[in-house]
Image (cartoon, rainbow, N blue to C red; front, side, top):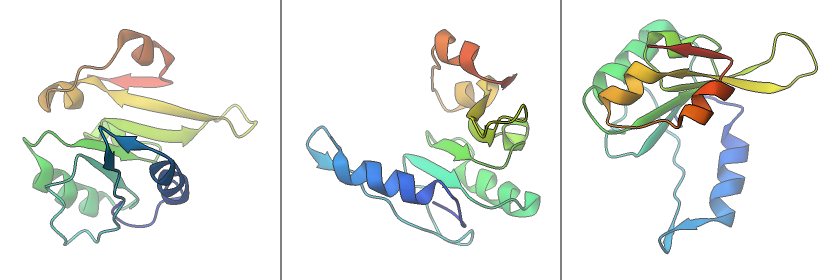
Length: 121
């Protein structure tokens, strides 16, 4: 997790419950200047566009899933962007950038794409 994200607590809680192929899921916090290119998933907690650009530049061409909660970062190249539904009720929805997913070799289920509030690419 790079920066501060309200998703961090939930991610840590889920990671403690689950293991993948017998391996513990490790959640680390990082700063924008850190090297996180060995990660499989990077949650981007910053809302700052120049910081986002730095992170995406470091990850360019790497098979790393990017996730944010910035409400518009899918449009800038983040694969999944969580947001609160603007119709009220506090429901959590998401946007998907299909082109960014394809660039890292990730195939997103058509059913998942249909559930997205917004899609890019």
